[in-house]
Image (cartoon, rainbow over the protein chains, first blue to last red):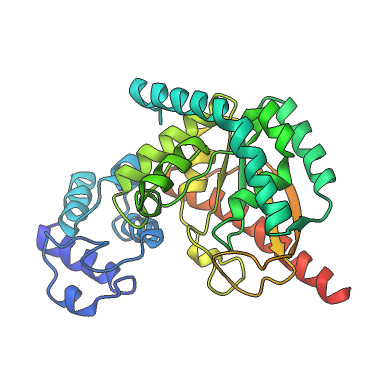
Amino acid sequence: MTEEKILEKVVDILKPYAKDANALANVSLETNILSGLKVNSARLVDVVLAFEDAFGIEVGDDDADKVETVGDAVRLIQGKLA
Amino acid sequence: MAAGAWSRRSLALQLAVGRLAAPVWVPLAVLLMRFVLRWRIREAGRCRREYAKLLEERRPLLVVANHLTMVDSAVIGWGLGSAIGHVVRYRGLPWNVPLRRRVESSGLWRTLSYVMKCVPVPRGGDRQEVARVLERLAHLLRSGETVLMFPEGGRSRSGRVDPEATADGVGRLIKEVAGCRVLCVYLRGDAQRTWSNLPARGDTFTIATRLVEPRTGLRGLRASRDLAAQVVGQLVEMEREYLEGRSAS
């Protein structure tokens, strides 16, 4: 799966959790999920679990801890799919 | 999930300093609550006896509670043990996990939280930093200390336990510490309607406890989420029982 496809899917998953719709509209790989998109930190686990379901991967606690930006999420998923 | 050597040493030092200061600050805190703020806890004796028995078993014990005021941890500490009891058996006084932002707001807060068994946590921030705090807490639990956490993170704005606000930290800790038991505590003052900074002066608290050992067949993040949900489910149930009891009386 290409990076663009993964990014598209990641943004779709983030939609219901992102409180800042403008930031989501201008999202890039550098966008911070918590401070940029204003995703509640308690909901970040739900986001990562949604990644697991959508991409058929399993993410450990340590990997999830490293997800700060949209790009981190995309690279994590790419790595798991490889 | 293992705390580094430096982290373990700093916790041991903090514990030693706190233990030395305990004969001063623990009775002062209780006197303040009992005689200045005139708070009371119903059936504190029963609660303390049950808690003392759990401490004798020498197994990891995580205390998890609902959260309505800024001093819940102090009132729960008082409910689980008398001033003398905590000074004599200092490990029974649970460690707290206050917000780092509040702790770092002044030198006084920093000093008090250091002495009063606190491990500050960043809220809504870097998960790797939170993970390091959880490592420290796991180390404390494994070494026979008790830890108090509020799974909702902050004070419940609705005044009710909110499963939607639950983070996975509590579940992650239970998962990482083998044989970890969880003492669920539901605390509420009679005058407490929703959330506040302090309970009302002269308020009387009800404290209910329930010991659980959550288990899960899931892995990774799902396991943490499942374990946290089980604990919060207990708090929801305890709140329902409390509210039913209050409306019946």
